[in-house]
Length: 295
Picture 1 (spheres, helix red, strand yellow):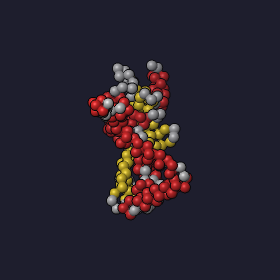
Picture 2 (cartoon, rainbow, N blue to C red):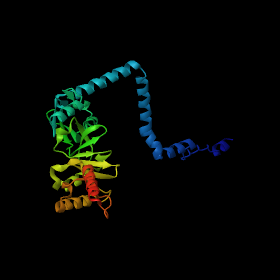
Picture 3 (cartoon, rainbow, N blue to C red):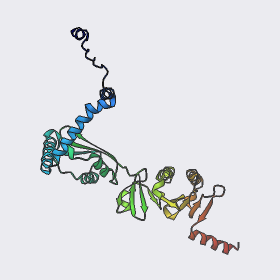
């Protein structure tokens, strides 16, 4: 019996399996995924911080304290001396227009530069009738610099609204109480005459040889121009090539003094057949002479 016992060898312990378990293998594979690692590194801290912030800000008293801290910090920065604007300087205009520009900027100085809405102020200034362009900037030393390019009047436009000053683009600049206030500027009359002011100015330059006899231009039916002279004379110009037609009339005046006679109007609307109409008195006198002579 003892020999049998000696012959039986004790069983060896089983070796541990080096392979990972299924869950450990899945976790290792998951840790190799870039998206999962990014979520652990960024997403989890963000969610924790968001949850903590939500819980903290759920109290209305805490939210009020944070708002007060932010407002006080912002005010203390904005009210620093280097950010304060103390006065406004206007360049490019003077007189009434400068007063209008100041009135268009309703700012009480001193004020913080953070409180100035420069685009809105610029729009308010350019909306003025006499202003063509404007630029605003805050200069060192607390000065709001306003540079204005005014509209230059080139003619007086008589419309249904009265007498208006207009610039080279036809934009109204201001109202006139009387034509005598700006006798240095030519007069254009008629509906939408301001939209063709460049053409009107060219006709006025062409009519320069007529001197002080020129009274103005009238826009007829938004199609063509009439040149108005003293003694109630008119030169009717065509829709196209109006300058050339006016030059022909001036050449005719220089050669035969047509406009110095009893002429009511010179009709140039038909280039092939210009006509001259005598005034009423001259026409009656002509008929009287013909009756006497029996013609």
